Length: 105
Image (cartoon, rainbow, N blue to C red):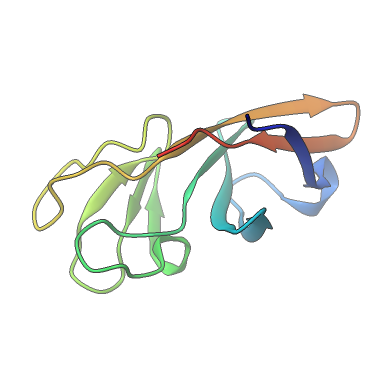
C-alpha cells in the first residue's frame, strides 16, 4: 500500500511550474496549474519519453518527442500517438509542504 511522501515545499513550485521528483522507485512529474498541484508518471506511454520536459498548455502536458498530449488531472492520453493513460497520483498540501501518494499502475 502506498503512503504519503513529502516531495517539496509549496514555495518550491511557482504557478505554471514543474518539477521532477522521485517517489519510491517512480519518477513523477509534479506541476502547479490553476493554484493546484498535479502529479503524473514522468513517462509517455507511447515511447517512454520524459513528459515533464514538454510544453505545458493549461492542464495538458505535451510530450517533447512526438507530441502526444496528456491531461495532468487524470493522466488520460488525449491524442495520438499515445493511446494509453499515464498514471496520475494523489497530491495533498499540508501547510507549506506538498505530498504525493502513488496510485499503483
